[in-house]
Image (cartoon, rainbow, N blue to C red; front, side, top):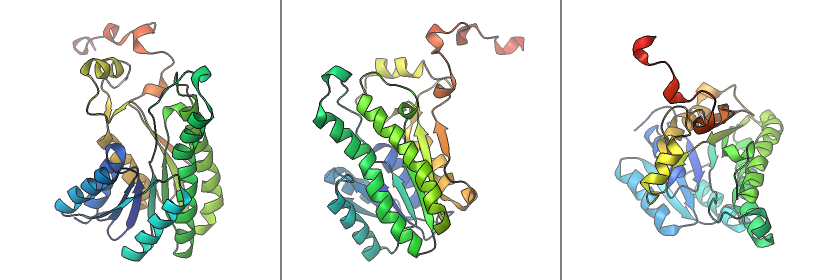
Length: 268
């Protein structure tokens, strides 16, 4: 299992399932030695085993990416067992507990900012110091359409993701002289909950211009590009992986010309 990331050491947070796990699997298949970090011990240990069983190199580290002591332990373990980190994917996030703004409180706000944004600061700080001493590296922050558009019931989440994209821009500038590139991935309507009802998925998918909802695997190619030598001159950028959702002014259901009214293929 060797490829574009042969010999690289990659740390992925929030890698116990979903997007983080899919990216970890893709990186391992491309030759990286991956470190899967997650707050859920059983999930992350099973995820790492699945990569090893498939012939890849992976270790699991249990911890909270929003706590400084856990982040210190993560990078100490990585350096001790695998060597200096070359790649960091800041994917750890919390999306549940949606509330109207009036129903929010300080604990709710602080939790979302700590898990979604402070974690990216802490991990970037630790990783970048190591990368700077060893010739550079690549950092990818996972954002959301909520960074530039509003979700109802997710004021704290959207504020944190807006911070993610600001953090990307600033660190891309400040870390560039050290050979460190920082970019953002913006997932769209990605299904990562196996228990989500089919009716909910159908309703979500109907708003996507490409005609389907996304999967965690849809993020792996763009993530691989951003950390590979193919993106050697790319920093401070963001890649939308959303099937065209953010490109539209209105959803298909309420637009002036609906997709079902487009010319059929046999007429063009």
